[in-house]
Length: 592
Ligand code: ADP
Image (cartoon, rainbow, N blue to C red):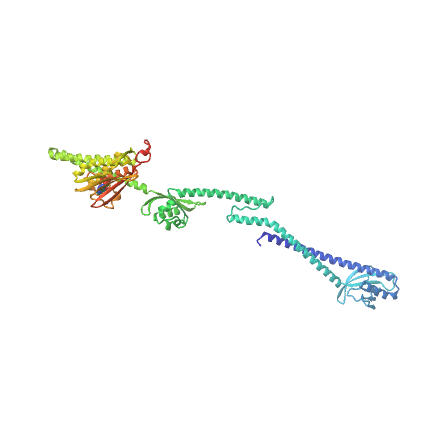
């Protein structure tokens, strides 16, 4: 019986039943004793009374007197002689017998004092009282007898009533006991029910207050406990959301796995790096989710060995990831999981690679003219100086190569200035058509010498735009210069200025060799050339278009290339007519 209320009720029932049973037994005994005592007393009194009367009764009247007494009292009356013979026996029904022997199984009383005793007559238990008769020569003793059975029958009736009364009292007490048990148990039941609700997670629940007693103390203790719990939970959830926020918005990827390798946390960055969706990652083992063998191996090693590890791996084919895996320890210093932090170092590696390539490219580019200068100078020293024709030719080559060297160094300097943001751009409002005319005029001769017709098409009205004029001139010279260099004679170059509302577009179209489709995206890279020999022969450095791209970016402009191998190329760049307000001394005045 689990409920305390039932236990108390059962205890009350047992105690009350036992108490009432004992009380009933005592009462029964008391009643029996009392009634028998009363019977014996009345028998003795009656015997004495008859004895007194017999003192003065004549002997012939004695049978009648005995008969009358028997009928009146409703008892058997015996008059005994000195030698214990029954002189007269009278029954309550008025039947009289004379001179018969003592009929009981108990010896006839001989004592000279009134007393009572029990004896059986024809198997029937009886109570008897004897009283001595004084002054009567014949009758020595009077005995009165009555059967016990009617007395017990009466007692039984009384006992039945008593049992009913006790049962009633018992039921009443049990009812009171039950109510009392309920009163005691009900606060506890309330407290237990509420505590269960709190334990199930409803921590905002409060136990009702039950006054100053122990219940009250328990209630307030539970309430203050849950209050504190709630505060701690709030603190924890705040901390949790802070940590979640940090992890979520971290630039680095974060994976948290448990001891068995199941992913518990994966932030957006990690998900993006591993190329899955967050729902795919969380809840899966890292072996299934990450698809990168190296990452999984590293996490497993850390889970197994319990010390942090660091490695760079390539995921999703081309993402370089620097991976730090640290074990998480439990209370007993055992490994309960691991945290993997993933840094995307792809950009860093690319820059590193580009730098190495750049240095290699620059060295290579410088080596060619230097080798030429050195070689021809040596040849001159070895004797060619003596031959005026050869001398002139070689010195011309040395001059051309040093010129190339100087171009290269200047271009490099310019490019590095622009890339480092130290190149200053002074924007002024100029007519783009004029700039195009000037640039074309500067290259007209060169074009004519190469057997190429150079045409300029400008709108009738001037097209004003905010530009750094000398830079845009450089762009035009680079583009027209390339068009001349990569167009075999006879060829044609058309430079057009197109006026749009907010923008101006300049197109340089040639009928030259064209650029293969695959190379178009790369021609703006430093030192990238489609045909290295041709570029060198035309005095190109491989930096022209890289410079163009930087200058246009500084103007917030764009450049497009369309080309067909063998038919020609069109380079068209577009500039906004208005540049945003710039602080002449500020950094925005420089190339970003
Ligand atoms: P370069 O100094 O070699 O001309 P650029 O950066 O100016 O270097 O150009 C890069 C490459 O783009 C050139 O080497 C050439 O292969 C290609 N290219 C540029 N302009 C043209 C053009 N108008 N026609 C064909 N190819 C061109």
